[in-house]
Amino acid sequence: MTALAARFAALPGPVRGVFWMMLQVVSMASLYVVVRKLTFTMPATEAAFFRGFMGLVVMLPWLARRRLSELWAPEWRFIALRSSLSAAGILCWFWALSGLPVTDVIAIQFTHPLFVIVGAALILREAVGPRRWAGVALGFIGMLVIIRPGLVDFNVLVLGALGSALSNSGVQLITKHVSANVTGGVLAFYMNLFLAPVALVLAWDGWVWPGWTELPWLIPVGLFGTLAHVFLTRALKAADASLVGPLDFIRLPIAAMFGWLMFGEFSDLWTWVGAGAIIASVLYITRRETRDAARREAGAG
Image (cartoon, rainbow, N blue to C red):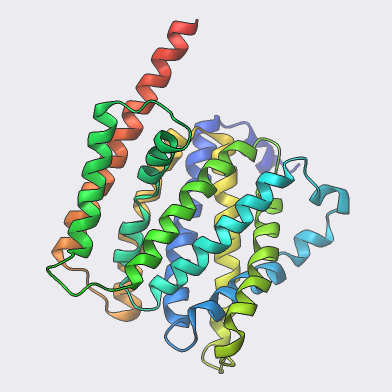
């Protein structure tokens, strides 16, 4: 371990968690722009294939330094489920980005913590109090403000953004569960390994060979996506999700700036109003859950 790495490792966990989460936010915002650019000229499924394939290529130096035994993990069932959910989420997400503004896709994806609560109540039979349900309702109202059903023509690509949010809720839960025993690199490797062949099969019939203008974007789509997975795992390993999770909201203004600079995209007022409602609901729910957890720990002590 170098002196710099040793000094970084000596920092408090929350500081390291915030550092890794900010890198994840920038990586994800950059990935949105790259995907938006690629889907102008190729099907979303093909862009997803290059996301997985180039992700594996980017990881080759990392793989060369690993023994085969390091890629095996006792949590393989969770890793397989996580890889499946990640692939489904990426396919839905790329499909949404092929026609929706970047900020709309991100704002709708921010609803994924709300789906976690609904799933916990319906599937796991967890008790959810009226205040948390009120927070969930506010978040879904914010989503309705963005898509405005009945007031503007419904865009079927919204379903892609919603599908991505649903998948991401499962991915985040599994990541937190396995991050103590499985490295971010291993999780990213298996996700790319699963995504590439699945997306290739889906893209085969409508395949469009990339031209010279697309080639420079193929490496970043794998690089940023893989780094985002690694950074998220490290952030969740270093700090509580209640601390690093809300930092993900910074992704919206960063991606909005990138979308404006690259494509001249401007989000309307309703997108920002809806996004504000979603963010407020998630922050409120996070605060409530953190306080409830602290009370339970105090009572147990």
